[in-house]
Image 1 (cartoon, rainbow, N blue to C red):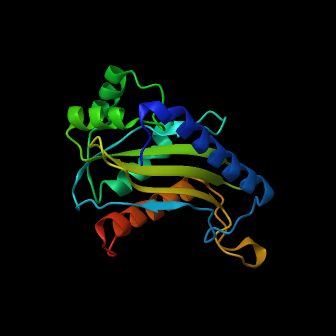
Image 2: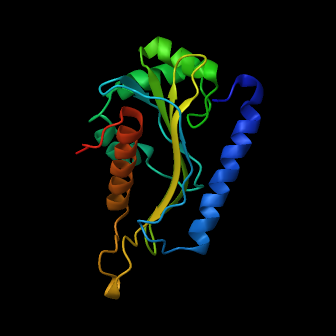
Length: 205
């Protein structure tokens, strides 16, 4: 179940531990094959195609300065293919009014309030656990889709760690050297998985 105000600190500690594991794995295996991923998954619901959803600004836990808007653009572009997304300025306004300190962690009450104010069925949260541009790009990310009813569990979640080594090959062929290319791939892959898992369809384009 999604965290309630009473156990939010425990929930945050668990998520931070997951981030540390992802970061450690990237340090131990800096040239992780793209097709191989460290992942956890939780599927407990379904959303219809075109459902109204809000994406909150991703929380940066990487320890590096990042332009979150640039990181989020590919995710927004891919997710709007399957959801009716709230405008980001409206989302930012609600975040400010609710005085949310963290956009990677929400209590069930906060999710409910966002749903009421924006008229959305679900909220997408993202947390960047690790990020690297050189010697090869890598990204560690946790994403969740949560319902906005007070009793709604997490509908979908996944933690993923990927690097620029897309395939094992000679002379570095097929290796991804640009961070924005890697982010685009991760965004498309996660959007497709959400589409398949929550909408029970497999024709994502």
